[in-house]
Image 1 (cartoon, helix red, strand yellow):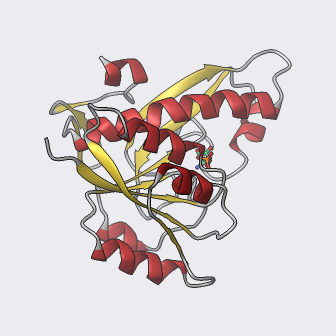
Image 2 (spheres, rainbow, N blue to C red):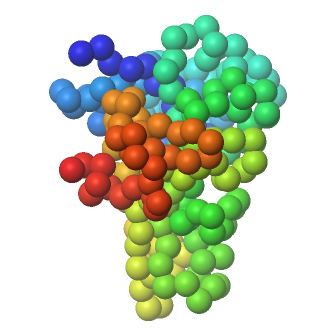
Length: 211
Ligand code: GRF
């Protein structure tokens, strides 16, 4: 079966990039990581690309926007995946890749959009936290939510331990969402998300996606 071609944009550590690449090496994968792209020449994810043989585009300093957009347009990309890409994308990009661009965010959206999500949830009375995969729209962390993984907040939980447990969930969830998306099990229309053609009332979970 023809594999879909995805681009992964990242800015730092690259653990999600790594998980996405590893999943693509499975025999049943429906996607290939055609290219990874970063705005940060120091990003650890560049090493991950190097070791896994995935081409990595490192944007010229202060020109990440147009150089990346042009490079993406020149490639036959089916889906753009933001995996820890720490830049705000302009409207023109969001329109160009409408319904074909997804992001992972370390909170149970719509709670805690933006930064410092682990710190903020620990300061609250919430007993659970987690991560969300959503379609990208111009408004930050606000597009239709596709899937979530939850973790319970433990007593005396530190920001570090919570971040670690959420990241483990991210690394498991994100590749499976991509696999289902390119496999046409998931689509969006009018701000809603559909799974096998049926509108979902709550975000999909990893177990549903792996079923
Ligand atoms: C993740 O927590 C992701 O949710 C957020 O940025 C972080 C990136 O981590 N958007 P990594 O670079 O994938 O390890």
